[in-house]
Image 1 (tube, rainbow, N blue to C red):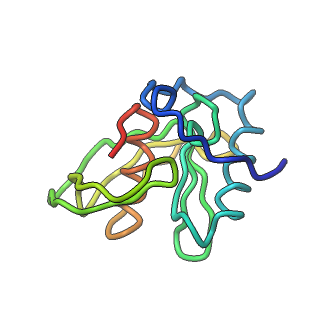
Image 2: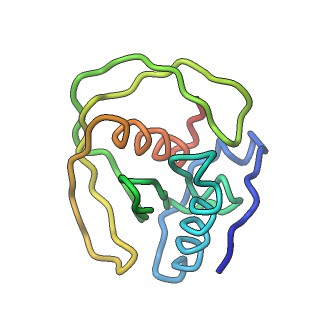
Image 3: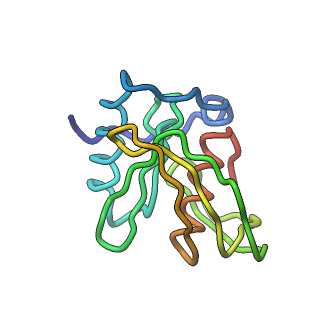
Length: 137
Protein backbone atom coordinates (compact mmCIF):
# COMPACT_ATOMS: atom_id res chain seq x y z
CA UNK A 1 0.00 0.00 0.00
CA UNK A 2 1.09 3.58 -0.38
CA UNK A 3 0.41 7.20 0.41
CA UNK A 4 -2.27 8.77 -1.79
CA UNK A 5 -2.86 12.32 -3.06
CA UNK A 6 -5.25 14.56 -1.13
CA UNK A 7 -8.27 15.60 -3.19
CA UNK A 8 -9.87 19.05 -3.15
CA UNK A 9 -13.13 18.37 -5.05
CA UNK A 10 -15.76 19.83 -2.72
CA UNK A 11 -18.64 18.16 -4.58
CA UNK A 12 -17.10 14.75 -3.86
CA UNK A 13 -16.17 15.69 -0.28
CA UNK A 14 -19.76 16.76 0.47
CA UNK A 15 -21.17 13.29 -0.30
CA UNK A 16 -21.87 10.95 2.60
CA UNK A 17 -19.46 8.04 2.77
CA UNK A 18 -20.64 4.46 2.44
CA UNK A 19 -20.13 1.91 5.22
CA UNK A 20 -16.79 0.11 4.93
CA UNK A 21 -16.49 -3.68 4.73
CA UNK A 22 -13.60 -6.12 4.98
CA UNK A 23 -13.14 -5.67 1.22
CA UNK A 24 -12.12 -2.05 1.97
CA UNK A 25 -9.17 -2.91 4.22
CA UNK A 26 -6.72 -1.72 1.52
CA UNK A 27 -8.34 1.73 1.70
CA UNK A 28 -7.75 1.78 5.47
CA UNK A 29 -4.09 0.87 4.94
CA UNK A 30 -3.66 3.54 2.25
CA UNK A 31 -5.32 6.11 4.51
CA UNK A 32 -2.99 5.26 7.40
CA UNK A 33 0.04 5.39 5.08
CA UNK A 34 -1.10 8.76 3.72
CA UNK A 35 -1.52 10.14 7.24
CA UNK A 36 2.00 9.00 8.14
CA UNK A 37 3.37 10.60 4.95
CA UNK A 38 1.55 13.87 5.80
CA UNK A 39 2.51 13.79 9.49
CA UNK A 40 3.85 17.36 9.42
CA UNK A 41 0.65 18.65 7.77
CA UNK A 42 -2.26 16.71 9.30
CA UNK A 43 -3.43 15.18 12.56
CA UNK A 44 -6.15 13.18 10.84
CA UNK A 45 -7.64 12.17 7.50
CA UNK A 46 -10.86 10.63 6.21
CA UNK A 47 -11.03 8.19 3.29
CA UNK A 48 -12.92 10.66 1.10
CA UNK A 49 -9.88 12.96 1.29
CA UNK A 50 -7.99 10.33 -0.75
CA UNK A 51 -10.89 9.85 -3.17
CA UNK A 52 -12.59 6.86 -1.51
CA UNK A 53 -16.19 7.23 -0.35
CA UNK A 54 -15.88 4.82 2.57
CA UNK A 55 -16.50 5.52 6.25
CA UNK A 56 -12.89 5.20 7.43
CA UNK A 57 -10.76 7.71 9.36
CA UNK A 58 -7.16 7.80 10.53
CA UNK A 59 -5.71 10.08 13.20
CA UNK A 60 -2.84 10.44 15.61
CA UNK A 61 -3.23 9.51 19.27
CA UNK A 62 0.16 10.63 20.54
CA UNK A 63 2.76 9.04 18.25
CA UNK A 64 0.40 6.28 17.02
CA UNK A 65 -1.54 6.45 13.74
CA UNK A 66 -4.95 4.95 14.58
CA UNK A 67 -7.56 3.79 12.06
CA UNK A 68 -11.30 3.64 12.79
CA UNK A 69 -13.68 1.87 10.45
CA UNK A 70 -17.34 2.94 10.43
CA UNK A 71 -16.91 5.41 13.34
CA UNK A 72 -19.98 6.99 14.94
CA UNK A 73 -20.14 9.50 17.77
CA UNK A 74 -22.60 8.08 20.29
CA UNK A 75 -22.21 10.69 23.06
CA UNK A 76 -20.75 14.19 23.34
CA UNK A 77 -20.26 16.76 26.12
CA UNK A 78 -19.18 20.38 26.57
CA UNK A 79 -19.74 22.19 23.28
CA UNK A 80 -17.31 24.93 22.23
CA UNK A 81 -16.39 26.91 19.12
CA UNK A 82 -12.93 26.61 17.56
CA UNK A 83 -11.11 27.35 14.30
CA UNK A 84 -9.83 24.49 12.15
CA UNK A 85 -7.95 24.00 8.93
CA UNK A 86 -8.19 21.11 6.48
CA UNK A 87 -5.80 19.69 3.89
CA UNK A 88 -8.69 19.54 1.38
CA UNK A 89 -9.65 23.21 1.87
CA UNK A 90 -7.77 26.49 2.05
CA UNK A 91 -7.70 28.65 5.18
CA UNK A 92 -9.33 28.18 8.58
CA UNK A 93 -13.00 28.20 9.50
CA UNK A 94 -14.98 28.38 12.74
CA UNK A 95 -16.82 25.24 13.78
CA UNK A 96 -18.50 23.73 16.83
CA UNK A 97 -16.90 20.82 18.63
CA UNK A 98 -17.29 18.94 21.89
CA UNK A 99 -14.56 18.49 24.51
CA UNK A 100 -15.50 14.88 25.25
CA UNK A 101 -16.90 12.27 22.88
CA UNK A 102 -17.67 8.57 22.95
CA UNK A 103 -17.15 6.76 19.65
CA UNK A 104 -18.24 3.34 18.45
CA UNK A 105 -16.11 1.92 15.62
CA UNK A 106 -14.44 -1.15 14.21
CA UNK A 107 -10.71 -1.81 14.32
CA UNK A 108 -8.72 -2.86 11.26
CA UNK A 109 -9.51 -6.43 12.36
CA UNK A 110 -13.21 -5.47 12.25
CA UNK A 111 -13.61 -5.90 15.99
CA UNK A 112 -16.28 -3.65 17.54
CA UNK A 113 -15.04 -1.08 20.04
CA UNK A 114 -16.35 1.88 22.01
CA UNK A 115 -13.93 4.43 23.41
CA UNK A 116 -13.96 7.89 24.97
CA UNK A 117 -11.74 10.74 23.77
CA UNK A 118 -11.12 14.30 24.89
CA UNK A 119 -8.99 17.32 24.05
CA UNK A 120 -7.30 17.65 20.67
CA UNK A 121 -7.81 13.97 19.80
CA UNK A 122 -11.57 14.45 20.27
CA UNK A 123 -11.52 17.49 18.00
CA UNK A 124 -9.61 15.67 15.26
CA UNK A 125 -11.95 12.67 15.38
CA UNK A 126 -14.99 14.94 15.13
CA UNK A 127 -13.48 16.72 12.12
CA UNK A 128 -12.82 13.42 10.32
CA UNK A 129 -16.25 11.95 11.15
CA UNK A 130 -17.75 15.15 9.72
CA UNK A 131 -15.88 14.34 6.50
CA UNK A 132 -17.56 10.89 6.49
CA UNK A 133 -20.90 12.65 6.81
CA UNK A 134 -20.14 15.04 3.94
CA UNK A 135 -19.75 18.01 6.30
CA UNK A 136 -16.94 20.44 5.53
CA UNK A 137 -15.76 23.07 7.99
